[in-house]
Image (cartoon, rainbow, N blue to C red; front, top):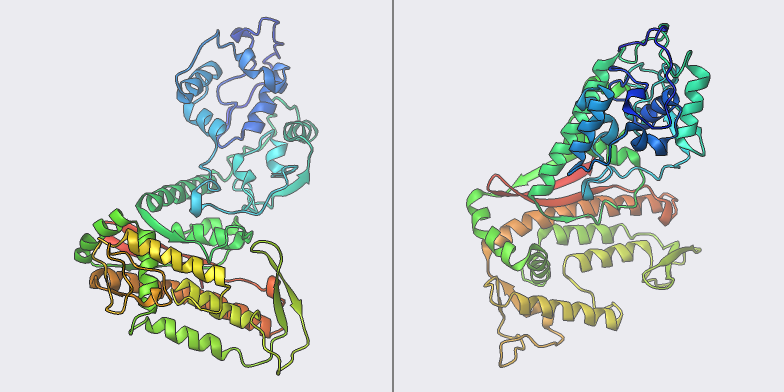
Length: 470
């Protein structure tokens, strides 16, 4: 870090906002410095407010074709390394804006700022210290502090002026913020590695089911654990980051030959339609998935005590739970166990007739749409007892779900792998939920088991990915 000798005079800006009057010197911008830190320092040195930055730099009515040209010009005016300028102005890759792989951190109060007190004493703040999952400063290895501030820029300006000697100049007594620069380099390299791998996952992904992940889950430990699974967290960083759950990734690759055969089919008829049709036809067949049958029996066996909870609907697809004294002689269709049994059947194609008539009809019509859409795919055939119109369309009848039999064995084998992966995650989550309820927890406040199932096409293979805790 280049320090400013006390002999260099402070130049006040002229009314013309001339570049010759800029108070700045090469090296004043430090590695990993945040935009608010640069702004506070630059504005204090030049006696301006942030909104006058572009005017003060004096772009002479220049227009820029892209942001890179703009940053190169700023770096030239300031005499700073373009890499440092880009890092300050653009910051880190945004891990909270990565689609279904995002770091879903809890809502942060925008009036809370996070900082390192020793960095502040040096007139410096890093964008690394803004990371909500970081607990220690990567430069000084001390706990970060948080404080409420109405305005971020004014808060840091006040912190610098009160705690940094000679600010906005750099005192010779200041210890360099690069004391532990190695930790910061490792942290940035890890974040970039996570970002790169997520982009690769997103590029290869063709289907995902987030039913078990809950995008509204605010448990930072799970999301951070998933990032550490995507890219192993280097040992030196374990001292800096918050606690996280041990998330694992299970990969089940399909054969290259089989993938080459079925990929064009699911690409033409869509993965969602073919998989949805498979689940219904498979559940109604003479040989349903063994794991589906097993988990149905296991969930039913957990229903060995009178129910204490009832679920009541409120409006459209909303409900609330009410606690009752258990009555072994009363029947209940809305207790937690029976609801899980129903969810299992609906999710894997065994649509129960106990559903509301309109809901059951909607499932029938959806299946008819799938059959009509996939009729020429050759994936299935109508059974002899199927009620089919002269034009070859399946009619709506009581036997509509059991009117087809699956024919494409290769695609069936792949879907069996996928369905079993989903069933494992479903059963693990729901059995934990029921167990917690039986232990006295309220249904809405039980801890949840999170995870997701995805399908990617990579290196000529279809692969089933399962993210799970434990």
